[in-house]
Image 1 (cartoon, one colour):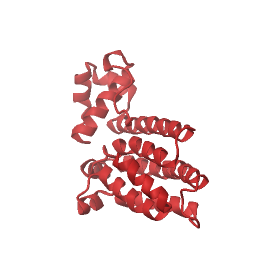
Image 2 (image 1 turned 60 degrees about the vertical axis):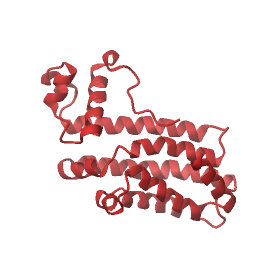
Image 3 (image 1 turned 60 degrees about the horizontal axis):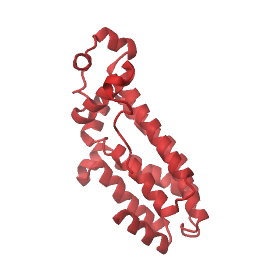
Amino acid sequence: MGFHLQARLPIAAAEPADRILAAARARLFSGGYRALQMADLARGLGLSKKTLYRHFASKDAIIGAVIDRLNRDLRREIEAVLADPALRFPARLRAVMDRVLPVVSLLTPALLRELAEYAPALCERLDEIRRENIPRFFGRLLSLGIAEGRVRPGIDPDFAVQFWLQTIRGLMQPEIMAATGLPPAETVARALRLFTGGLLTAAAFKDHEKSFAA
């Protein structure tokens, strides 16, 4: 099951702040930063700009809230995967990536370039989320893999976590994705294949490949 990007409630039934965030998210990820205009957003929701600004002080505040909500929902779903005792390492890794990749796919090079130009604080927030989430969740996932004997002997888990963090931070730069010609989700998926090839035992990597080919 992939990560659900839709609002949990129909927009008409949601609270005003939830309606604003749902509409802003749709505009942001379909049209980009500049396409999200406060006047258009208010008009589309049937709200006055005064009401819109009562809930959110600026466009960047709305986008920051969208990012934080996506992050909060994603963290909750990953926590559930890591806590599921029925999952073994290959299935657990696949389940985590099934939730991560749809979110990563939203961060297109065009959107990231716009954020870097017009809202650098939001770029920093995205990087902060990576710096928080990758050690927290990948570190736990790696520990579970070690406990199951799925990780090659001699692997330093702390180094592996930092290696993955810095790899993702580097690859998710707009100019790098432009150079490779790969969309965000494919960038992460290919990086993961290279990384797990050196991280996992031969048997575990074979299971990993089967899991992702299914």
